[in-house]
Amino acid sequence: MREAPVPTQQPEAQEDARFPHADAHPRRAGRHQGPAPARPRPALGLIRSVRDRATFDALARARRRPGGAVTLRYVPGDPGDPPRVAIATPRSIGNAVTRNRVRRRLRAAVRAHRADLVGGAYLLGAGRDAATVPFDELSEAVGELLRSVQEDAR
Picture 1 (tube, helix red, strand yellow):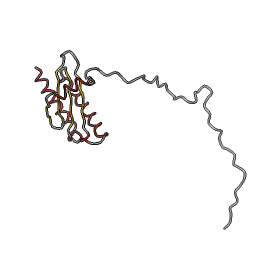
Picture 2 (cartoon, rainbow, N blue to C red):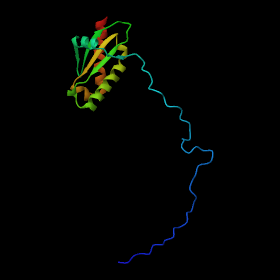
Picture 3 (cartoon, helix red, strand yellow):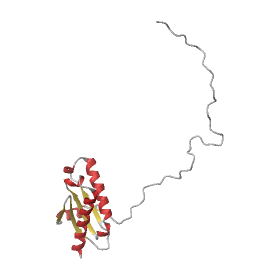
Picture 4 (cartoon, one colour):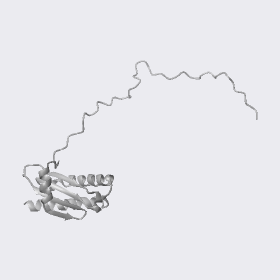
């Protein structure tokens, strides 16, 4: 086996290295992006979450309304107060990813039917089918439950 001869001299560079112009900033984007927002936009305040223990205890004692893949419990409150919504997704639905997906879907369904909400506290419970039911059916089930509460409040 023979060795090939390798030249020791390097070829000369064809072009000079590219450097930015003297007035260009070397680490900035071409157009101004503006300042980053300090925090996310505030919520509209139409629907609030349930946070106090007394309300959760009252919701646990409230009558359960079945509605297919979703159940609803309602505790009336002051008519002037905004509605408060809690969502329960048990472990029987699936892993954390599935439960979070169901929670987001239920939140979107409540937002779609927020006109049917009256003052008080709501607890939406998800059944096993809530993860597999199409969103239109889930949203319609939530809407029917919310309308039944609105009719009872009258």
